Image (tube, rainbow, N blue to C red; front, side, top):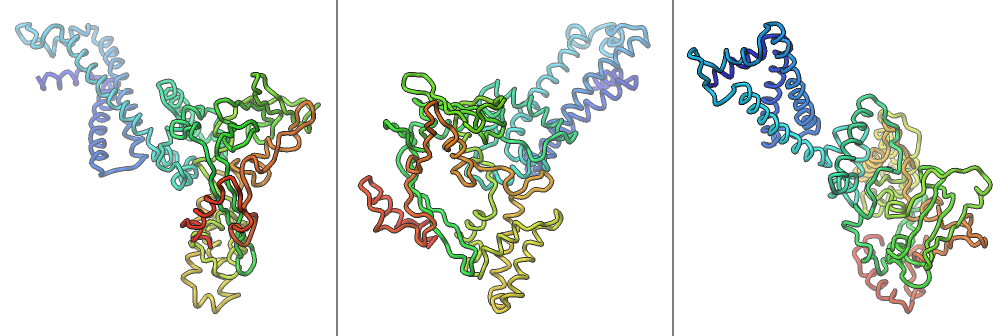
Amino acid sequence: MIRKYITFLKQLSRNTIGKIGVILTTSAIITFILLEIMQLAGIIHNAYIGLIIYLLFPALFILGLILIPFGWHLRLKSTGKTSRELLSEVFVDEQGRHWFFGSPLLWTIGGLTLANVIFLSGVSFQALHFMDQSEFCGTACHTVMNPEYMVYQSSPHARVPCVDCHVGEGLGAMVDAKLNGVWQMVSAGFNLYQRPIPTPVHNLRPARETCEKCHWPEKFYGQRLKSIIHYAQNEKSTPGYTTLLLKVDAGKGAAPAGIHWHIAAENEVRYASLTVQREEMLWVEVRQPDGNFKRYTNRKLIGGNHEPEEIRYMDCVDCHNRATHIYEQPSPAIDERLRSGQINKDLPFIKREALAALTGHHPQAGASEKIEEKIKRFYRVRYPDIWQEKSESIIKSAGQLSKIYNRNIHPAMAITWGSYPDHIGHAGGGGCFRCHNQDLVDMDGHNISADCTMCHSILANESPTPFDYMNNHSPDGRDYLIREYLKSEFFHSIR
């Protein structure tokens, strides 16, 4: 039986086209199986090998299947025989008896077709599983996606697979994502992608289908203490504390208040933005209790011929636009390393010198090494005694600055400081102030309130201590929060 199948394969490969088809199909399936076994055994584990296994070899296999019948057709034309006549030379013995049940052509093609369907189905399932892994998303297109993958790995959602947010659930979502992925492969292959990758991503699934699978809006309630430390650029890098009592609930009272008021089920906010970046509003509308919408129009843009790029209903990602792919700004990044002890805050002028080193102009090649050398040279020249005493700590601190730079600056993708603004809060005049400003007014000239106390209470603002407890007594339960905060591990870590 095996001998007859070998003879059959020889019949299929009597001409060049058929021979190429048989070689491609046979070698592709054998190589695929071997590589799959090696990958499952942990011998190889690489996104590029995965691309070869699940994309290249199946493509070669299908190409071979296409060439085989084409080659067979050419053989029929060259011999003048029918398929049954050619196959009879293989499957019929000298007495004219079929060695196989029924028609050799029917059974042979049927058996091979079934084997091909099983193989391609298995490959398709494995390919989908492979391409759903975050490692594939981040490393398969290394130049394009490596910056996003790098910041993703140190984000609050580092254990959430990319597909949970970028694809969502359901067959329709998967099909849309794979079709979009084809264009992404073409863009990467022919260098058609933009640098940096433009945001926001407009084909994301709605937040209610992704974010709210884990974050339950009805459970947004209460208050949360947050302390922010900014170190001054003086000799002692003096810390200044800003402590906020955040109102994280949806503000179900009569007056709109609370950070998550905007996405409460009973509220609805929609807006038209001047550009696709959603950073300047043409108008904002808020649904009223009677079901109508009240509009606030940007008076700076009244009279101009401005067409909105989009009209959007507000959801989670309008504020949490960098919930996962979080790029840092140089000063807060240094502050965080100073707070955590990764950079030695006892070094004189360390905040000033670190900021100057990070924001200075560096050539693309060897930028991080130049940053480290600048810090080390400063202490060798200006503070030789400290260099002798704390050289190890200085070198470690300089290394942290190098890591900050490499994490946030990616010349190949034109990503630099501020390429991707974060709309949480209102640093730099963005974020909340895109809507809560003096220019968005209703028909009576009243603007959307920018009262700080709608979303937080300020317990300290650039203060030498996290807050003055004696001056922050209140009847609304904050005393308890403050006492708990004073006992917390974070409070003692920043003192």
